[in-house]
Image 1 (spheres, one colour):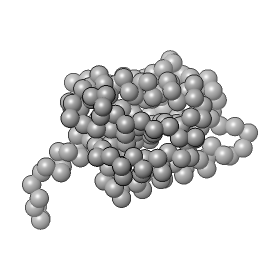
Image 2: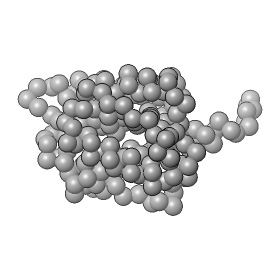
Image 3: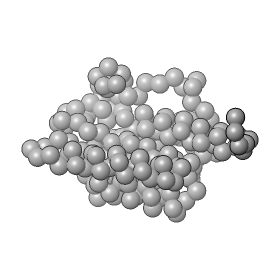
Image 4: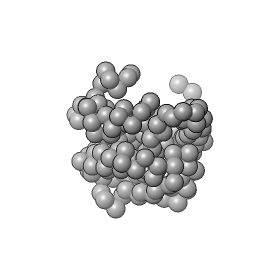
Length: 171
């Protein structure tokens, strides 16, 4: 759904499980810092709001959005995490660089999630211009960092629930 039709910060708090015992990694791109740091703050504040302890949030910064998949892998390999949140912003320019980067990052995070079983959340903005990024980093369409944190909590809870379910063969 287009963010123009839904505020990225809006969610039903009653549907969010407790995150008190959860541990998260956050990889943040330094490129477009004004945007990515606003996304990070929304993400971090939302995790704290839902009970995550500060010591259970492990943050690293990487040069650009392209480096997020390997950063997610490094975080997942070095810590016992319930999920990894990747935050970046690739603003369309005069060339097709944005398409290549966005596709590579989405594919990399998807593959890492599937291979590791650890949810790797795509908290990357892909706007056409800087103003669209501002609008989605705490502006008129909310903050995608909030959405990424909520997604991470929900996916971590699903993973935890399914890993503690009875292990049976068949139906």
